[in-house]
Amino acid sequence: MPYLTEDRSSDVDAAASRKRAPMLIDDLNWRYATKKMDAGKSVSEDKVQAILDALRLAPTSSGLQPFEVFVVTNKDTRAKLSEAAYGQQQLVDGSHVLVFAAWDNYTAERIDMVRDETGEARGGVSDNIKEYYKNLKGNYVGRDAEVNFQHAARQAYIALGVAMVAAAEQKVDTTPMEGFEPAKFDEILGLRAKGLKSVCILPLGYRAAEGDWLNGQAKVRRDPKVLFTHVA
Image 1 (cartoon, rainbow, N blue to C red):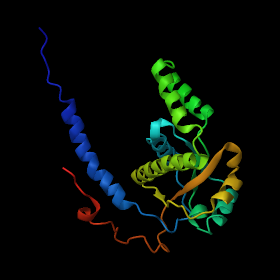
Image 2: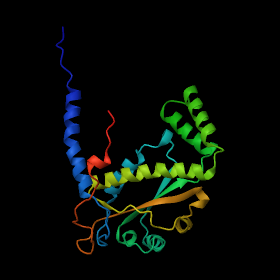
Image 3: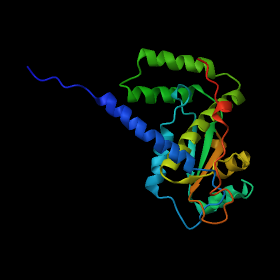
Image 4: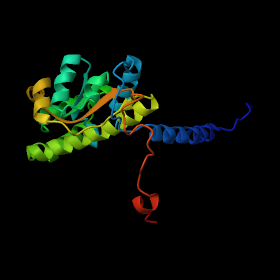
């Protein structure tokens, strides 16, 4: 009779989680909205890819991922984007700019695209999958376009948050921004022809040793007793 061994995989997983938790908090304490990037430093492509891989895995409502992300490295284009972002230099001094562009509306074609991708990944479009996405189309298609765009934009913000956490883990600095002119961004990147509208941006780079008034400042967050209400 073979010996039975105790399965301690759950204990190992729990121990690993406890070890990772302080590391995540350290990463979040390390990051801040960088005000001045070092123009002489560039983020390596492997680090950028790690950020994009995490961003791709961000959760979204019904898994639709109703946005696209434009990874801008061209210096001339970043200069134009900087002008449309009120001259904020992080777009030119950093090495990459991520532009999050949400679907301008939900359509049957877009939802069917996600349905088909789901079927391909899960061995076929089952009746359950067909019914699920049929219901989604019934809820979204025909709804006011602005309502749909705002819903899609909120999904992009989830991905923005995941990207910032992933960047912090890679020790890459970021500056999340809403302070730009979306219509000009849309024109520069040709987004409207793709049925997209820019909603937020994320320059990537490395903090400058000098000239950043926020570098080294204490991180200020609300008192947990005020921020959190526990309902038992």
